[in-house]
Amino acid sequence: MQVIVFEDEKVAQLMPLVGLKPVFGLFSGTMSLKERFETSAAGRVPLTWHLRGHIAPWFSESHPGALVNAVVDQDLLLLNGRLVCDERVIELASGLQTGQAVTQAGTLIACRVNAADLMPAGDLLPDLIDTTALSGSMACIESSGFLLLEHIWDPVALHPELMRRDCSRFRPGCREGEVHPSAVLVNPEAISIGQGAVVMAGAVLDASEGYIHIGKGAVVEPQAVLMQNVVLAPGSRAKIAARIYSNVYVGCGSKAGGEIEDSIIEPFANKQHDGFLGHSYISAWCNLGAATNTSDLKNNYSKVGLVVAGRQLQTGLQFLGLIMGEHSKTAIGSLFNTGTVVGTAANIFGAGMPPKYVPSFSWGTGHPAFEACRIDQVVETARRVMERRRIRMSPAYEEMFRKASMLEPATEATL
Image (cartoon, rainbow, N blue to C red; front, side):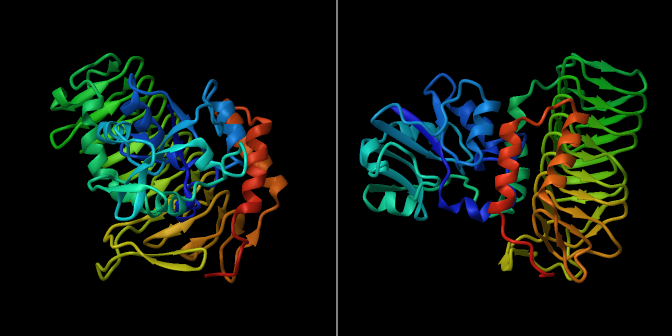
């Protein structure tokens, strides 16, 4: 039996966060959905991966040995890539018989099929799996209690609960790195510091209301304050006098400064200057200029609405800040309204707040409209950004980047 983690037709609801990565590349809590699949399936079943064609070459390159968009067995177990996977998912799915599916509120969670039924036209997997058609021909077992990303704000909405669950990933009380004598560790039994990590003079790590993990090689600079569930991934850095608290994940190689609350920062992003970031999702390779500030609560305390490519969406959330796609940038002093969505490779500058939706591959103030970026210039800037982190933009990554610019909705006037 071959187990395939797949992308389905609802991936579009998670754009622009998934313009340059598969849906299981999204983070919530302290790891990506892909890492959750791998952790849950470890020692049980090997996983293979299905994703959109324009991302597949880069994904294969960055995951050597992974089986991508290929079928090598007639007996297939399919797992929805939007799942927040745990051991229950693997156990339930592994017990399925051919022709059976697990659904939740009509959404396909997992199913077992013959390869010929999945690929009736030949030996190629479709770009996206049509789960509606697939489940319609199967015996469905309705279940509940699974966490599944349905909307672009779900990674932020699920983040606090997953941060709490992920506490067991770390070794509380383990201290392998270097801690300056003047640093303050409150409730050290709930703090773990990885090998090669450095906690510098005057830093405060307060785990009295949660846990703190400083990953391998990460650095906490002087007078930074971390509290209430904070994870710095390996190689990341909390900048001098940072205030980071209440469920914050800082990805590998990222820099975090100023005030950060209830937010996810993917690997290799830069938010090292002063400014408030709250209830937000910042994708890889983004750069927030000095004094960039986000609002995450409306003045009338009502629920936050979003605008995504012309669609008005109601989140049901009282707190929601900035949702930003990969390689986007802000100028110094940028301000963002509650529930703003910024696409991939956008460049935002100018006085005042931009509109609540910033199209991908656009630049300007948004007043009266954004302008479309020249893709050659965007690629060259991205190449320089990646080189600063000693990462080479491969031909496969560049090709994905260029194709993504053609697949994104066209830049429109202010929405």
